[in-house]
Length: 232
Image (cartoon, rainbow, N blue to C red; front, side):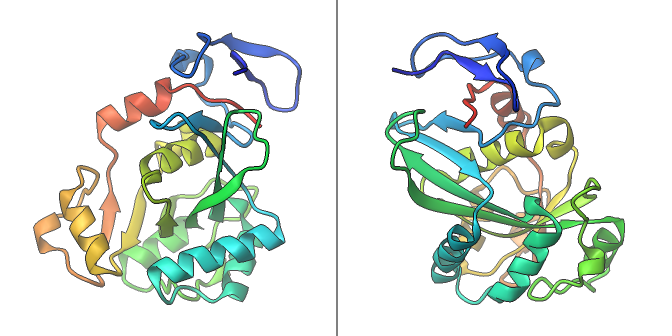
């Protein structure tokens, strides 16, 4: 049975009633500014997916998934050092039969470098090394990042939903203000970006190795704010 409400972080209070069933929605006002603990939602095929920060063995497994899909990325010790500095860096996507989350299966990874103001300036100036970021350019856990650099995302058929769930984990009031940048590493990624409505860069001018900015369209932001979310 699907629970019909959204739990507050670390408490027993119910924040807002949901419609029963998988199609329930919740007004944005009840969720604005809230950081969700292990937020989850139902995918279009009816199965439940959620994101959370990984334990060490989960990080290693998800790193392998990302490296297999994208090829050479930042070395694992570098990833661990960035993740230790700020857990916004690494999210694992899990799939389960429903929101009870019994026996979930790891199905994806969303990885960022949370940049501070100096890191954003270095990125804009072409002085940012994504394979081995200077930790002085990475926002610490106790500070809001100035931008997110997308290390990589692997979530076949679920990347859009995975990104929205990470937004709820970070807190929409912060997440929706952050510029997001990435570098095109594959022909598949280049083709996807040219088809996407999320690029703030001139898609026709992009090529392998180009840095681009992601701009979420209003329709995406509206759904992200209104979607039904279940906490872990």
